[in-house]
Length: 133
Image (tube, rainbow, N blue to C red):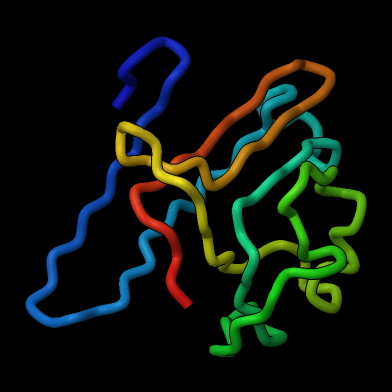
């Protein structure tokens, strides 16, 4: 939905009849500079994640959970292109990150922020629950 002119809201829900791990995700890609005419390597990304799940050569999670470090540490703003070739042994940033955070009064927590310096545009992603390892 579009609650305000500068806000996009995507809501997911899952109902199970037994305890079940659920990983609801969105694979929308955003270019905050020019709508896709250039790459996003100068965008700065920040994630509220201390852990991530490494992937195999075909980008499938291995089942392991690792602490972020080096190029995988996005807890402070990092230019996407700065270390993408080093991230997880050359696999880039196509990973599950285990999110953490402090919930706000509205029940949501900020889990990601992207900023594009030349346009000044930014995007914040908030979630209802933290990731589980």
